[in-house]
Amino acid sequence: MTNPRADFSPIVDRKPLKLPGDARVAVWVIVNIEEWPFSEPMARTVIPPPQGVTIVPDITNFGWFDYGLRVGIWRIIDVLDKHRIRASVSLNGSVCNTYPQIVDACLKSHWELFGHGFLQRALPKEKDEQAVIRQTIEVIKEKTGQKPRGWMGPGLHETVHTPDILAEEGIEYVLDWVNDDQPYPLKVKQGSLFSIPYTMELNDIPIYAVQHHRSAELFDRSCDQFDTLYEEGKKDYRIMAIAVHPYITGVPHRIGYFNKIFEYIKKHDKVIFMTGSEILDWYKQAAGYNG
Image 1 (cartoon, rainbow, N blue to C red):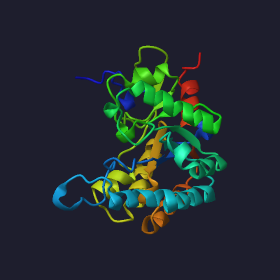
Image 2: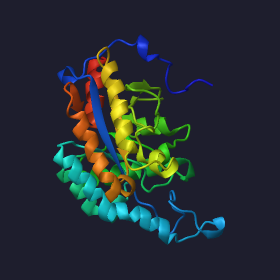
Image 3: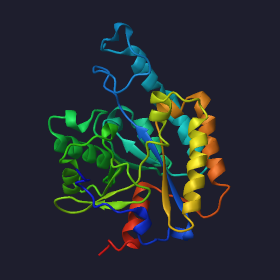
Image 4: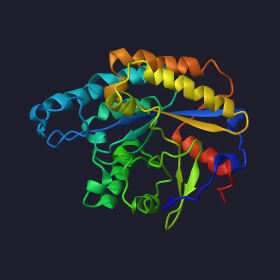
């Protein structure tokens, strides 16, 4: 079955577009800030419990995650502030109520906040996904004063109805479809919805929690990925996403390599750092979707 949400479009057949400042590559940094319910099985684990059974409460794995909120996120904020990079935050809506200091810090750094479910629980497991999407949008709007424009499903998971619901609720872009280096329109029943490139390749979950690479891996991959996209960007622009989680990249033995990514990228000209909404607004205008 072909992709039901988008026409097939080989990147080599597309009309080239120009990024702001004639940049070759637009880099955006996604920080995933989540809440894992203490009274439920953990969203993921760093170590399995003895005897291979599910244990609630899972103190060990909750503590692994909770370190990111208590300590790790502040290291990530420091690095990005130092480089004057505004992150885009995929935010569980409940974080606005339970960890308000973190949301306040994101706003202070002028980061963009967008929806990532209310709790870190995949939408197919929710009894009413539209209610969860609506609740997430409302709490973020109430906290920030701005309605979130983007969405990423917890675990990147959707139901067959999710894009239609997102468009109906006023969401403008989504990250779940990790299948391109450029934005593109998705097919929805009403309104419009665009896919903005996200990444599994420069994402600390698969790199460290699944593949168990050494601490330098995200830096090494980011440099290699950037070099290729930068060369390709001579002919047509590319979007490069870097995705991190506070409990993984925010630990002491990895944060230095996170910093080095931006030291390396900023040695090059014709590179621009953008947020998700900035990419969307530029793309819609450049590709002729505004009016």
